[in-house]
Image 1: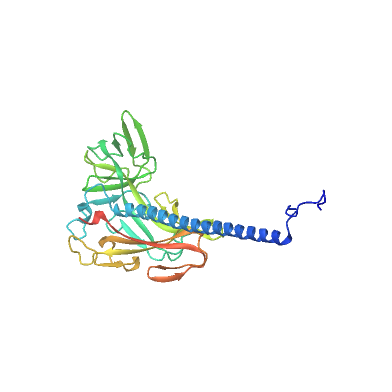
Image 2: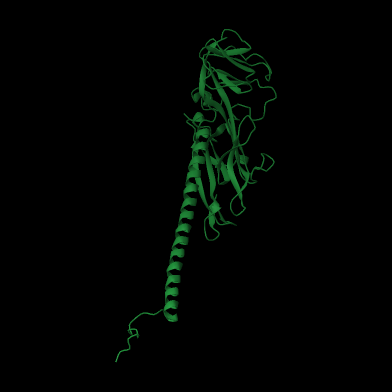
Amino acid sequence: MNTPNALPPYTQRGMTLVEIMIAITIGLILTAGVVQLFIGNKTTYTLTEGQARIQENARFATAILSRDLRMAGYMGCGNSAMQGDGSGTPLIYVNNLVAEPDPNINFDLSATVNGIENAASGVLTSIIPGTDTITIRRASESSAQLTGNMTSNNANIQIEENSGGWEKDDILFVTDCTNADIFKATTVSSGAGKTTIAHAAGNISNKLSRPYGPEAMLMSFISNTYFVADTGRTNQNNEAIHSLYYIDTSNIPVELIEGVSDMQLTYGENTDSDFPPTADTYVNADNVTNWANVISIRVALLIDSIENVTDQKQSYTFEGEEITADDRRLRRNFTTTIALRNRTP
């Protein structure tokens, strides 16, 4: 006989402790799986991002150095003007009129490229000790033809248009592919369809070494020194960030690309003076016998990921040395060899 108020035996009235524990366990397992998947994906993403950043920074740094090195010694004339007959004798005489010039404002055959091996921190502010530096000197790609004051040796020169955006105190380079002068612009004034550039104050003479005709070209004088230095910034682990810098005739360091922790340079020297010239040996800056004979440069850059992207300290090889890092940054070695176009036919 059934009791009217009794519940059917199959009616659910709650969950047992065992069922709750099983449900919690299954939930924890699923949550742990999701968290593990998230951590794994984040680790992979961070590592991939670090690798991509290294590749990008390496391409940028290599492109900048390659472009400038290839142009070393450029005078606006054919490279035969630098190489001469293969004996290393230049065909263009360069006269420097800048009064008390900075050492980088120098342009002779032996000074268009030179470097320092294992530079000390006192050479340039915050430079990383043990890294190399290199200085490239040349004229700019942009130029303007002379249009006035060409029949005599005047205290100024005139061009039709200020295509180089030249200003007062700029260091300029004028050449007719036989002679050349480096001078500081005293004033730059435009009017009546012409630009007049005076060269009095700041120079040892208010006149150039000779009158220049309409075939002469006016260009900027460029002297860039590249080096690796401490940026003064740190990553998320409070570790120093290093970058590739350059400094020009203004003597103001400019940061180019971060994540460059070392730069080592070797120089291809034509020791037997054959023509056309070929690099007979590659040596560091201390062992170059004649900078005029350097016709190529091998650049080795060590690029890091800036942030710690690996789960343990990494070992890497740079310039033949096996090194174990003291952090968890990713590092890669990039090497390229660059020919100096103005010293080879």
